[in-house]
Image (tube, rainbow, N blue to C red; front, side, top):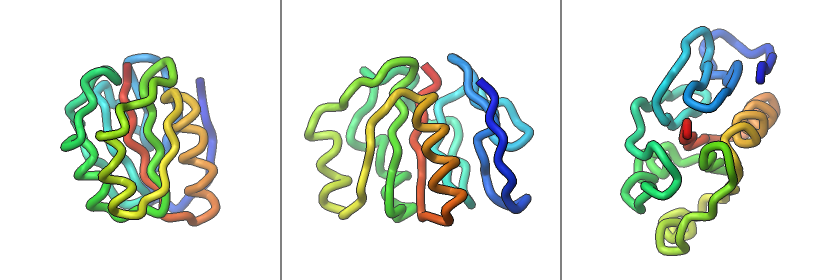
Length: 123
């Protein structure tokens, strides 16, 4: 799936997603990542939604986003409540969705100048 969004050259924009690869800017990334307008954290440890642990979200929490989108691969898989508790404690809003939907939503919120981050599992 290909996306197009005009943003300043300094923002990390998701340009496309297919299972196993996420295109961020002009780079193809074959690992799970955490991305915000100004930060790209790669590789991010979980390769599948079932591997997600509470500690994995700490780099995203450190970015202090208004909203964190969690892309769980080709299908939406809700993490255990204990894993999401850190987001509640940090008062960070979050949405869990499949990675394609998370990429599209990230770009929309980025275009609205929202403080958004996405934790994307390539699946």
